Amino acid sequence: MPRSDDQRLSEIESRLRRDDPRFAHAFDTGRPRRPREYRYVGAWLLLATALAVLGAGIALAHGLLIATGLVLAGVAGELLDPHRRTRPNRHPPPRFWPR
Image 1 (spheres, rainbow, N blue to C red):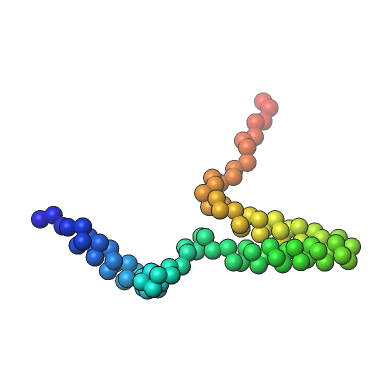
Image 2: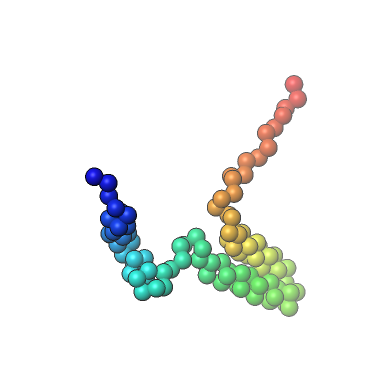
């Protein structure tokens, strides 16, 4: 006996409520939360910190603060990349030894 679309949808809904009740409740209220991979709050805070450290390093003419700010800005830029997880793994090029 084939199931109707309503039965399948109700099964999916009950499974979702069982697996992730917070998401189901948020979806019912009309304000679902974005998936974790699209939340960049930590990366934006890191970028703001990096720019503050970089600015302080420039104002104080302190090389270590400038370097730290640049490194933190690079890390924040990498965290803000939306395609970070979909890029293939980087492998070094093969070495060809002369015979």
